[in-house]
Image 1 (cartoon, rainbow, N blue to C red):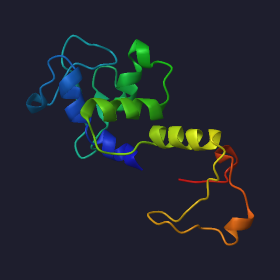
Image 2 (cartoon, rainbow, N blue to C red; image 1 turned 180 degrees about the vertical axis):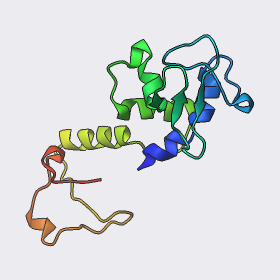
Image 3 (cartoon, rainbow, N blue to C red; image 1 turned 90 degrees about the vertical axis):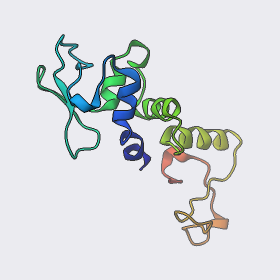
Image 4 (tube, rainbow, N blue to C red; image 1 turned 180 degrees about the horizontal axis):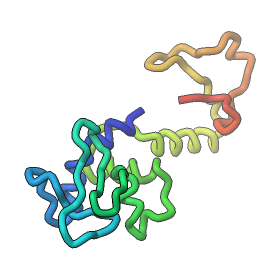
Length: 141
């Protein structure tokens, strides 16, 4: 899914949002425990997992953003959408797909599941069935 594509930009996001973030020094202030000394880093070769040596926690960018008051009650999908928007990434998020499907469902459109990357329905006799409810597993993405 596009989650990993978005989280690959963890360092870029941290540069924009963590005070005194300096990638060349590797360590930075932990956004969770806010220890006065730089004690947090991006785990090498993990791409987007962070580790704090002070609070001894592993976490990711979603956890960091959820610490902000305005994101406490947001879903992972909404937070990933926020990251995408802030970094101006050209990816389609699950949050956007859900919103589109909700819109189509409200219009009472038939939501016929198709093969990934194609326009071919994945079911036989799909013209004799209805696909109105995304919640009952009648559609997929």
